[in-house]
Length: 442
Image 1 (tube, rainbow, N blue to C red):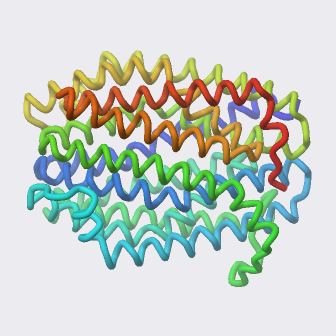
Image 2 (image 1 turned 120 degrees about the horizontal axis):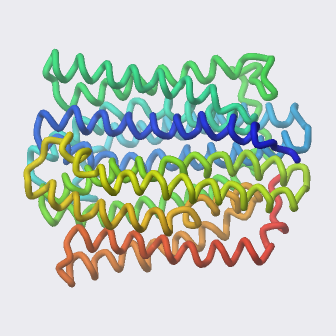
């Protein structure tokens, strides 16, 4: 077998810890800023909804690059794997820089256009946080690209180390800037910027090590190859469009949530943070799926690809079920850390009970299995299903349930879980059809 149980454990355990740490970065901002007030929490929440959409551009590139690098490693072609890694980092950095410049110029207009008329103190907090964190995008692009390359090499320990460092800088910076210097939202944003800058630089330096299976040389010369860029973009573009439209759907529902008032905005932000914990095992296994299946496909070993898909999906279900069972009973305690009103806390508890049950049942096929399809190069199919599901379920049903049936924020979350079920059905059908075997990347 290409991957022993020990190999999978060495890949998965750091990824689980890394995903947990990444969630903590966002949660640390929200929890620490919550001492400033609900307007600050709401402002950061609004920005995070837009930032995820923008960051999706270079996250998709990282996925495309990881698939290409993994398949070249599976083919035992280290030279082309290294060339692909170099072009991935250059492309990610350039696109992230363009996104940064756009946000710096039009952040106020973006917030007004997407969220309409929100309370003035919420908008002021959002603008401050958005402008400062936008400067971190190029560094985050380098970090995402570098982490994807190390994962493709079956080395997730490096990205774990960098993620740990990023957490320390972020939380330490928050403590100093928010509690000592009392600069609130700006302090949280500056800490995030410093953490991402350090992560991006360190990741590039580590990729210069020639002892790696894949390493960078002559980094100052991009040396773009049309064929290789085409391979990366064949996965990255559909993945980016899929993720982008997915986030557009979240923004549209975010606008709906904003219309419910500050209490719903804060409750949505808090539940989103806690729900991020519930997804940690699945998110980690989804990342590992790209590495494992990508190498199997590069070696043209479809039987092993199927074997590891079943194995990783089983692990994901066990992990997600266990974690969500714990969160189901501990969410009231976690909600208390956010220092919100009694009414907001009660709304959060209702949503978390529903979310934990649905996540344990429906999340894995919806978000882990499509990474298997992307690793084979079948990214256009996942894009089509995800976009159709997002518009039909996540957006339309959110307005029907939340606004017209007066379910409020809970209606938005019900629509989200129905989106998962729709995706589950079509991704499972695609896997068993075997049509993904006809996809080509390199």
